[in-house]
Image (tube, rainbow over all chains, first blue to last red; front, side, top):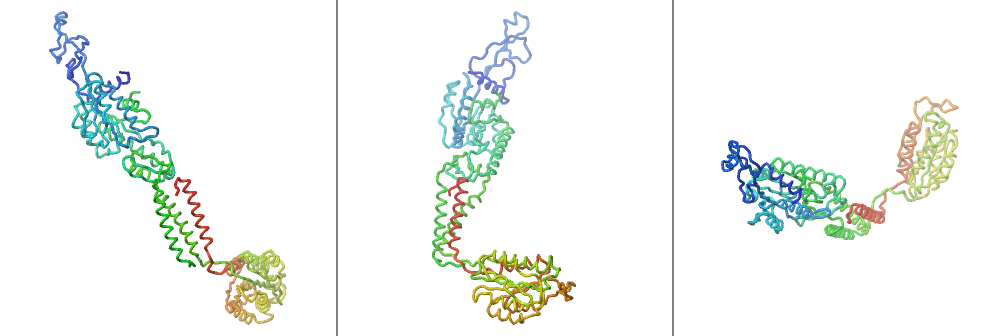
Length: 274
Length: 307
């Protein structure tokens, strides 16, 4: 695992939704090579009596507690918008960048971590852990008609509390009316939204009469793009992006932008890493 | 507007409908100007594209088709065109009273300026002659369509001197006009007929020949102006001039300064030498239709819309 993945994992471990086991040296709730000894120190009220090191106590003459490293395991869930609107892009489909981000997400999985993939109303989860679980989830065949809102509903109901959830989409289905659902999901999980940026947010590449095909429907329209139309478009795209960020942030989500150029970097930037 | 071949109008309308359908079909074809967009409703709401640009182009194409179709139907429009065989005689008073200075620089010079304005305003092809009169009338310039000759004739109008023979001038002007065609006489005078035949009698004769006489009274009454070299007041017999105009089927206008005189003559020149006639508009319609279509093609090409 490289440094970036480690940094990302640490960022998730320090996430605010991460449940904490009370007390120093408390046993981990996951199996694995926990109970790794860290140090001995004087007993403090509240310490687990099972962690008392009687030999050391005898040597020192005062109660000594064995401090062990807490064993942690992450549940990494991801929802990848696989709708046709993610197939658009200037140089390559946005979906490619989204996949990169998802792979980077699963790449942080360690031996006891569990990976989950949500596609539509389906939760893909195997009794596997670590990289095997990550590989399984990364290669899930997506549902063509998967619905983002449906996936969020499933995530809300079906994940283990404290899981880290990554949702990558252009979020055209999300509006202020869904703030309640977003807040509910964020109250249970460490949620990250990677908003796919409009490939033409800086400017539309054509002008005059342009034939536009809707990615998700057979609708085709010829639209006249003059200077005014292009300026209004750029403003609207910026406003929409800001509105989405505000909506997710106020609902307790971590938000970032998925750039067409590099999905993994986009994910790192979302966590303030580079 | 009338059409010599009205059935072709139906052809024009059918062409129009066919073109409209073709336009709609062509709009659906694939072009190089194509983008697949993630969410078309969002794009439309964001860019708020102007629908009228497309509609204007469609309307322009249809207009071009309609004009070409209408050209086939042989349109005839009622338009003001230069009168056929138009001839005008300007009768300029050169009596002594025309030297009066109430109209700057003097009445005679103002009349010459006005005659030039009349010549400039008349429709091309109108033949113009000049008759000058004082104690008698004489032809300064026989009628001609050559504007330079007419302008030279204006320069040859004699200096003010003598009495006022309006009747003689009208009679001579009548003789200068052709027997047929669009004819008229413009009389510029400042005085009272005091020589020769009765102008009213001549006007009656001209009226019978359908030659209108437009009379222009120049100068100011009761201004205290005297005819230079005499003690006579420089007054106008407006009643007589109005009667002459009415009898011959023309109009009378009174002007008090050079500007008014020039404007009145220019107006007369423009209005009296044109006539409303039904003309064949096939060529303008065809050229107009073709021009509209070519321009629409060029504009549409620039906007990436053909059609």
